[in-house]
Amino acid sequence: MRPACVCQGLGLAEAFREDLDRYVFEAQDEPGVAGRVVPLLIGLLARGLWATTAYRVRHYARHRHAALLGLASFFVHRLVLALTSIDIDAGAHIGPGLWMPHGGYAVIGPVRMGRNCEIFQGVTLGESESTLTTRPSGPAVPALGDRVWVGPGAVIAGAVTVGDDASVGANSLVVHDVPPRGVVLGVPARLVSRRGSFGVVTYRGMDSDADRQAALSVAGEDGPNR
Figure (cartoon, rainbow, N blue to C red):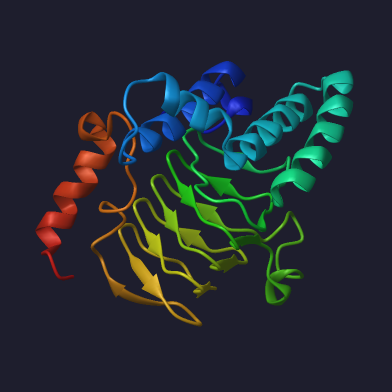
């Protein structure tokens, strides 16, 4: 099992490299963008990458008990929040390769999220009022698997699990678990297929990613329209 985030064995520099490479990879697919230098600049100027980097440094400082780094990263986080309107809780555990393609207000609470996920503008991931008193041992927040796609304006609230390769449609409200490869839409969200996020979540090395290939084979057994 590959480590999920920098507090679970993954180095801070390695996580940053994987985050940046996701932006570079996506920029290379843009019409008229070629080579490596221009996509690299596009990646470095991406507001989503700023927010993710500020989160990772705060998260690293918290779990490594680095007080001075934690204090500095707090102020950096506030500055980045003002510039991007993207708020990622330092208590979240987020795997590398997170891509947030657009700026615009987004809130990610102390969730768990796997690798190579894609989060759009206007998304909220956090607690639900109906579950605040049901989990006294900790916050009742979502857990997202690997390669999850969350569309603009979607809300995932409470102690729900969104499985690997799932897709949450724009403006949907998820208050119940989503199975692996599930595609959900609506308020509240309902399962409409099991075709997964394979057509929308892309990243470098995806064709050789054993976990993704295994999930694709299962999706193929389910049939193209399920």
